[in-house]
Image 1 (cartoon, rainbow, N blue to C red):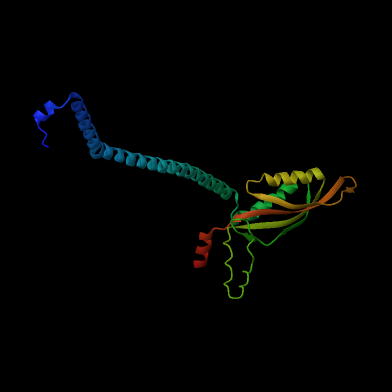
Image 2: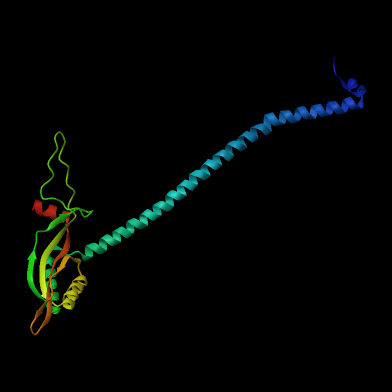
Amino acid sequence: MAIDADYIKKMPPQAKALSVLVIIFLIAMAYYFLIFGDLWSKKSFIETKINELNVQISEKEKIALQLDKYIAEVEALKENYKTALEKLPDQREIPGLFHSVASSGKETSIDFLLFQPLKAVPKSMTGETIPDKPAPAQKGKKAPKPPEPFYEEIPVKVTVVGNYQNILHFFEKIAKLPRIVNVSEITMGDRKEIKGRGYFINSTCTVKTYMFIDKKAKTDGKSK
């Protein structure tokens, strides 16, 4: 049956209203599927991308904060390293440094019974002692490569005699020297009375200083 203008005019009012509602519904459905639905899917896609980017930004910010922290730590280590190098004597200063140790003993009124330089001990960056001979290779395996020497520990065996306060004063003066000097392996003997001078004791210790190994200078020396 054809629907024309006359047919529509003859339709009851309720049928006309229902037809209008159906037409509006069909238009709304077409708008939703053709236009609004596409916009909604695009909106969901964009929101998902925004959330992903926010997560990435948050992660990058955390990495940036950690990087700034690591950079600050590295700079602090460099500064500490520079300060330590400034306090480490070079090879030419070693004799003068031990002369300062001997002078500190005289200034504190103690006498030296022994002042024996010992063999320098090469150390790695971690403080590990590097052996004179590399470890032997195990069967079927290569010999482990020893760590690179980073500095040398230069010890001197010292035995002094004096009263207790003067010996302590001697150790304090060593600690205040401008270069790094440590006193270790301290032993104190029995107290003995020396007529006219009071009570004296013998003390044995190891005085150590440290020398940075300049690899560049070492390589230049070999090439020469």
